[in-house]
Image (tube, rainbow over all chains, first blue to last red; front, side, top):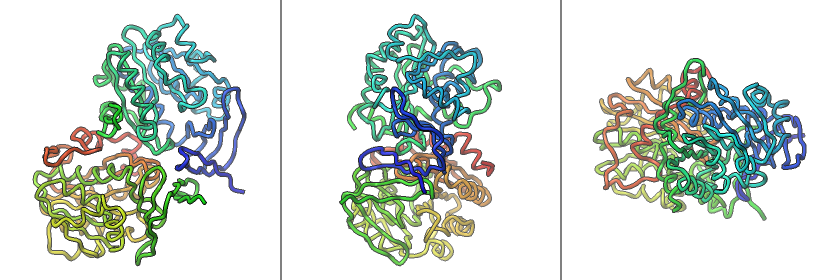
Length: 278
Length: 278
């Protein structure tokens, strides 16, 4: 018998992943969760039928969502991650010395399953510098008294439990929990398949923050490759990053100081999306 | 009835394209050819079951294969294109004033069908500045007496008729037909799925030319996005492009002088592939 995961990106475009083995499936309180062993991309976490991380290319997404804001800040000490229950983003953040991380994930089962079945990601969540809060990120940023240097919004797609994480109301909460020199990054989907979402988020962040940028990379296991991150900052300009990787922080597989600069260079077709006239 | 094109990238990874209409299919002397209307990517040219160009994203591939070498050269006048029978690369080359193009395509039916069914690409081939030679590019570069400022190798994948276009023997022929200050670019596939091919081509070009570089972009309709081009040059350094787009050359949708520099910034995982130890 052949097992294939058919991942529907749009009603007219889908990707087929041949599965060696289904490691685990369950219905959590929030979503359908599966961990599978693919033939070509290694083990993968699937939420509601959409590939979230694969062992082959997760390093690109996680290095880029974490190191671009972390190296922009001269001395990041307190980082809040909203979502990111797989642990990959936290793993990268912890490469920066003296950082404490609070992870606010709505679905405890994501955390538990990634610890067990994707330990090279989930293990990071066991580090003593990490505090896990199982809660709705939208409520958390409205209520917490803690203040952060950096907030990273590592959400799934804007369907299901993550929908509210792309709203201006939520970004107001993020602004509230950031220190006076804080900055935030959010994953903001494909510049080809989610144009309106991207231009909407960018407009919201421009309204709230003195500095707002979009940066671009390619995540092979996401729809059609191109992927955006949106960075908004109260003070530090990501085009002038404060730090570079030291020996202690180690070598990365995607991020370098040169990549940091190159990732902010947007082709005109993406600039046009940001202006809302694509 | 629903029609789907299932494009097999590997035995374990494939992409499904929903088809509104099959415009044309035929078996040429070299390959199976189809022009289809997809639901999400517009019209597409398919050779031996592999998507070659789609209306939605062909601008990325064609701008990047053409303008990076053309703007590197201070005064390109004679350009040779090997392959590229769809016309997209020639369309971009012709945006540079005073350029004459020879197109050497092995399969006349690609040219004829793209003129007819993909006119926004194929029409460029009717320009009086273009001479079409229906021939094997490998033989052409061995025999022609003409000399070129730039050679662009716009081939299909290294299976079927394009296999020989990735060999050192062929690159020796390309070196032969380049002027003393000439340069070449070849499309060199995915840095994830064609690692050995890419590192082999890069080693060959480093051996033959004083300057050899790989540059990276993302082509959404190609396997998993990331796509490489390899540039080799007898004199001009692409990291110091000689020219910038003028008003006469018009605005592009992907290429800018800033993109020109950013595209040569490679993440460590690709640098590792080029060193042959991935």
